[in-house]
Length: 329
Image (cartoon, rainbow, N blue to C red; front, side, top):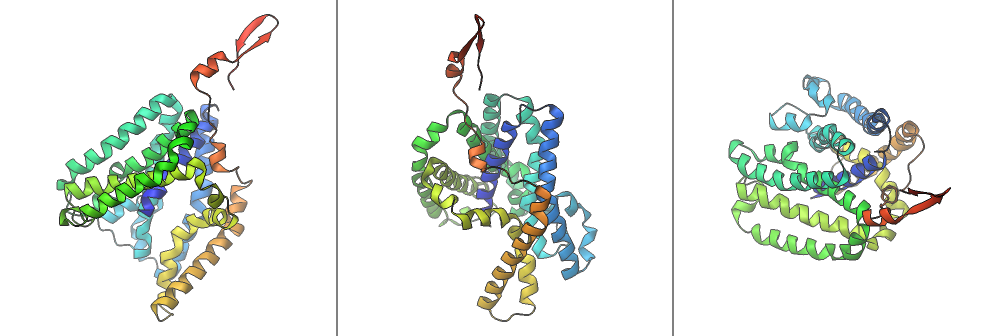
């Protein structure tokens, strides 16, 4: 479920930023986006690969496509990798999605983008339903981008609604937890049937479990955006954890594998892993990531500014030397 929440948030944040930069020239739009992504993603990623060489050796470098964010394909074809690198499949899904999505955002209108996102939300479960019999393992459905694009598309759709009809989310978003609880209850009931377990690799499980999970995390996101979670999200320690969360995600299993070699006892191993992971991620942020990123951006959610409805725009005019001009903020 944590991965699904990550995908929805990613779709929301990235789509919002893309829409904010849509007024730039085509070179400025794509250059800004991909340069920013490279500065954010690559330094900790390359550092992880270096640490993996130091901890596990070089034998896994035969799977060279890891460097191209194709770990989700490596997982399903059974490539020989250190177990700590297998979590990179989710980063692969995200980066593959964003090879195409910026083009859709730039060349299509917001309403068309919204319909496209809604279509992807509808198509992904259909793909899972029809393609499940083709794959011998649940990992194909779990890790390949076409089968997970509904979560990213859901975040993108929320971003567009947030810009155009923000009051909808602020008015009704507080019902999000109810939506999440209902979906969680249905998921719990279905889990009693062996055909609806995550490892079953049935059409039913690969369709409904993913969709119910999407409803759960979407309810959480809508609740947060409605303003009910502002104090939590703006709490300094929470904001700081958000900054270092990417590196925490990258290195925590590698740190665990290293700690397990020298520390005995489950509790001691977990605590040592947590401490070292947070320490490493903090050092990476201050010494590597923040200097490369440069000036921090404004608060992300506030930067995804709403726009007035079209009918309001049509009414906004100014007088200039007797002529009337439409004023579009």
